[in-house]
Image 1 (cartoon, rainbow, N blue to C red):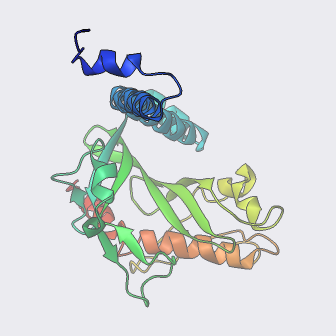
Image 2: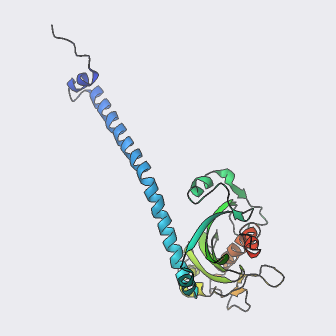
Image 3: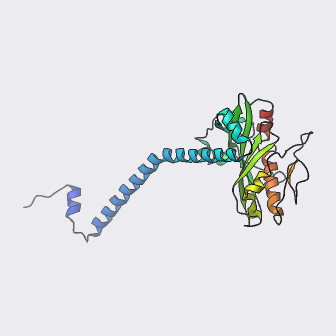
Length: 264
């Protein structure tokens, strides 16, 4: 009498290849091994991907600064060291418990977003994050340049940009439109370097402290305006509202005041 083999693995392999049980078990094992490999690769590669994203962001920011008139010399004189910090927008200071490494996970938590009242939501956001990553260039203890990410609604959809402010926090050094959905040849012209260069030197507030920035319907006629784009009035309005919102009390306003008081 043949001895019974109680080893389940050998008993499985002894089944004929057309056995449904054998097919299902092998398929399950293959899928499990593949899932483990994919999960392991994800965990292993995540730090590399994070580092690559950080390097790409830093490279993009440095390229932006190099393109701002006069900033290349400033970078060379100061060593070109841009620092980055996550700020608590409501408090206007560095976030206590959120870093650049944990910002993404923090913003995945809906409790770290603030609803914007309809009357104040001129950028059409609905809500804004409580934390934002900004970039600073320092000259000794003083901030000589601040790069502030902005987002808002244009005519065709969301517009993302980075606004560079000089150390007085009232003079625009430059702007870079990083993404948009505006109409090619009309509002889409906001991505043209010629139009973006018109921001340099534009002032934000008058002597009373009122925020005056605007995109003109035609040629700029005051130090607080940039030229408009023909046929793209709504896009220009979207850009103006985006800048005005983010530099106001619900955006970077508290941070700007802290920098001007030399408390940041």
